[in-house]
Length: 213
Image (tube, rainbow, N blue to C red; front, side, top):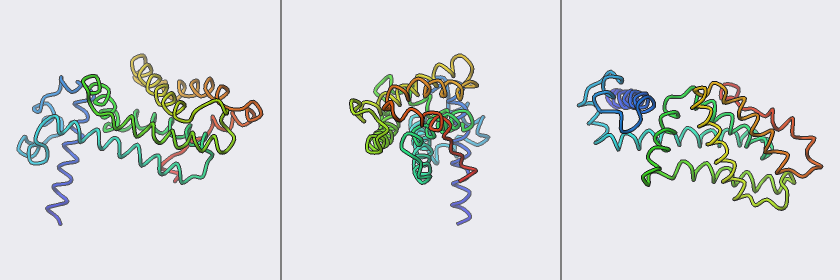
């Protein structure tokens, strides 16, 4: 058991080091030597857990996806309305991008590798989560009849991706929370029936925190 715990600790140490390298230099710019140096371990330890840089990158993307989906489940447990949960998820994803190196690296790797037929699963997972919430929003009467849940899900994730990318380029995501507030300010009136617009301020204020759960 002690040996297993040490092996898992080493694996996590390598993942964190690799995440920092990939975040700073991207997939192509990161070498195994750089990853080992940042992680403070050895190449032997790295190869014990991962056969290649590609396998290491896929592991980080997988870890990032697990973190994101865990947030989906935790926010679902709040019992908030579907639109409130969509807003909470966007802010929680944004918080993770700012504070979690695994998430930041996973996002960068997904975007880089997707340009050459890379992983689609992270985006598909987010879209699926938003589609379920969109269907609920429709059932709760908070979505216009003319809006297809699938369409809203794809657009919502696309909008979030664009907002966080521009925020990253311009401010290193320092203004991401403000930009997300602007996104919902523009989006909610266009998808909700007019008789539900009085709910918009409360929906925009919806937040979730792991510390408070």
